[in-house]
Image 1 (cartoon, rainbow, N blue to C red):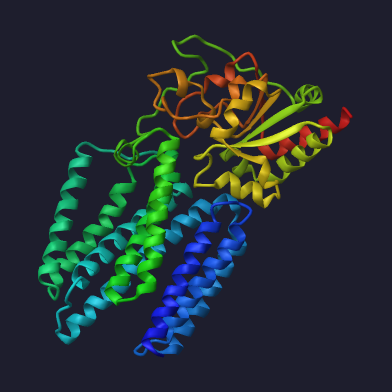
Image 2: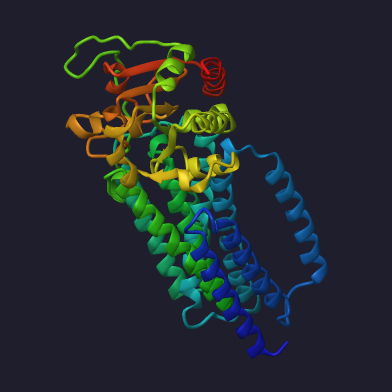
Length: 465
């Protein structure tokens, strides 16, 4: 195929990717954005396959068949609650693929005894380094989210010094590769250390910071792909990798702002490393008791309400309660009760976790309101219903300077007239600290599985009709 036509195809692919990602900015246009971006990637893949010198088409077809089969199985069998783990795995596979492609290109130069020139040696180093780190880091994130290992931060004395020393050695080996591209000893050393660093950089990050880690690893996978694009001289891969890398960094910054923490604090602060003493008391040691209520008690309050804000959290995801919650919101709206959903940027275990779950249950997009827009409405709201959320509604973030979450922007549910909290138990959230909201005079705790409680609420509200 004419080289100019191939470059034009890559340009068209880049335009489609940009337009697709632009549409991902709104829940209403996100499905269309996915299709447009997928079309852009298809154009890039087809153009690449038409380049002379591509390996056997039979091999490529076999890879497509096997990969597609695995993808279909995962897409149909993975529960929405396991989507964060799935995203972590995909990040890792992307990074691993980039590292393998860069390595294969290096070995092809070694085989013919020809040194790569220009930016290619540096691109190989970056592709292998970032890709390898992303691969193992993502596997650790997956293991934490899947609870195959503890989700708590793992720390040890001198940890940052060890990580810093290993990083310097890795960079030194990368520099040696750039100066002597055909020398394989630095390459093997750098690969081993990159894989090790991926593990060591993620284990000190606690479960509460997993949404940030996932978005950051997504950015890493894009940067690794971009570097590999320079290795192969593939403009389409450079552009798509750059878009993924940039969007991941932007999302990471947004999420850090949502927690009022710096990226450095997330990566190196070992948040959640020390188990907090959990007590059923307020600050200062005063013992307080949470008030337990039944769904029937809550139904009486709902029957006299005119407005309700529902705050979904990870507990809703675990219980797969989104459809029951949608049924409850529909019932309340049929009784002329205004219902909105308050979405905190880091609720759940990945960016947009709550949005995805509620969209699956066909909750209208216009009912999903971001934290900054809805906080001013809580003082005028009759009922705030918290479903499995904890740290994102903890008032200590506003008032207790000794709290590890102090300064984190929260949803101001404690300012509503009545607050119902659905939880399995009084166990703390990811941050490991107790929530004084549960002991407030206007808070009523409803203990139980979120889905079961939501269905009982539906029945109780109907019975009062």
